[in-house]
Image: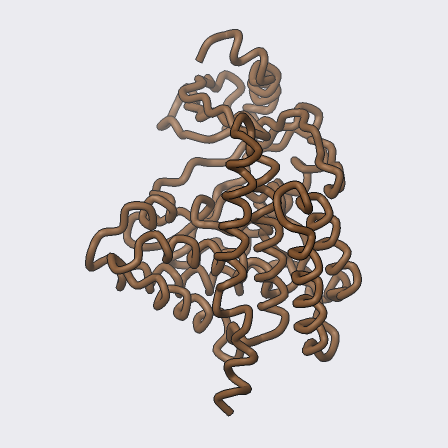
Length: 349
């Protein structure tokens, strides 16, 4: 990596901070740090590091340095320091919760530097789940079913990693306002005005089925195939806790379910991702299913957010092309059978 790239990303400051704490972090004040690979991402710069104490084997880590970003009108701005503190806390909590559990791994929290907007975590060996879904091999369905079951178990462990007392309860009005902020943002520029009214009406119908208080739990808030690592031997690890916060117990599983649904429509007959979705739900909670109203509300929320992000990341693409893609993706996502599963169950009864 060039010196210019390092300076512009803030890596030099992070390396200096690591050197100051190297005696505590790595057992020797003269530990050497070498930047190996530079990844420029929309909201952060990620650098793979080689860390070599004078004695002992080298180890590898990633430092993520957050960029100053422009926030959308529907988002709540957060400083880079706040993001770093929350991500490091969530990473540390999960690392402790999964320590010694076979089949699971978690990035080792090494250091956080809120003053530099940076976090440093240990490297894990593995392959992203989205790579397996993009280029699935025939006969890989059994492995994917095993992965789905482990992801479900990981979710249960993560949700149990916070304090026993809930930090609040799901609020239908707040959730509806959250959706409406995004729907107002994308209509009528990318979706017809009717889409907003239909989505809110669907929310109201499903929300009316929610009974009792739903406590908030720890959520990853971006659980998708790109953030799930398949380890050698079939274990899993989950990466990137930048958006970790509190939410409903169905938030993460509905998000991953939607991503699997989108992947299922691409791969069709090569692997059975429908069975993977079923294994995910069964492993998470056998008493729950896609017919649970809160699951369907989270699914609707993720559909709205998915299309909003699609519109906001249009970049150089012509407005007409983005509008056509957004409408096509919106209609396909709303056709997910799980959204109307409650009606199907009632009709069958």
